[in-house]
Image 1 (cartoon, rainbow, N blue to C red):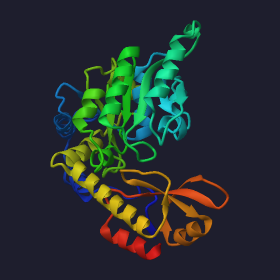
Image 2 (cartoon, one colour):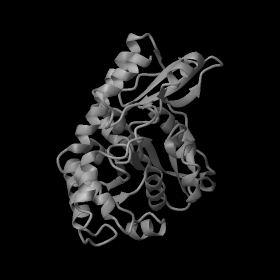
Image 3 (cartoon, rainbow, N blue to C red):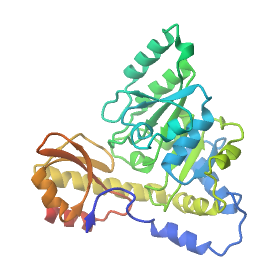
Length: 341
């Protein structure tokens, strides 16, 4: 069945698989101490334009979020997130499980507005009893957000200024980062992110890899004994090569950006298709996630031939659903969809 259910429903790009097969019989050191992982680290540093940064590979987004946040925060500190942020809504309390509170603020279309952030911080530091409260020490954002929206460079710069003023770290969840970087509407580059954020990660799981996220500490502020803490979290692969080889393949010839652009091109075709048929969009997303409003009848009719993701119910007769393109979506997929809707 045709599926736009998510961007991780296909295994991996064929060149990533070929790299894994090609290197399979090589005898390599474990725990990421192999030549392919070291090369992948250097390729990512070069792509970021930050040779002084440090790169670590973890297996998935929730794991990356939990490890990064728990190692960067002290035990009385918390992380600020939009209520729709992944750590707040769809990670089953993984951050709280490490002992750190997620401080949820109202967002707009997935983004954390600076006015809401400043209002919270002014209230917190204006409270004489704040020594008894969880201290906000990090701001977490997703780029793209869970609604497919993007921060502008000006917005990231403003968040950076606020974090500097209040002594907080800025952490960018880049599970779908490739699709944000290749959006036709963005003015943010990978170098901008590396310059403005204290830590971020480059998502592989949703952008061409079987699994894996590349965590980048771009400002030389890697937590003390980070590798030891990663091991303690059960997040260090003995066969670290499995992640290193994949990211080496994704970054050695610009494959990461090439396949991310494919998702954006197909998403634009999908948007044009739904627009031409008179469907209503829940919001304007410039990335690979598109949110369409369907009636119950349309959901049943389209759903019998094509998978998509349920997002939220608007009323008793209409729902918001998500169609996601990916590195593997083809023009033929869009043509098939046109016959279904």
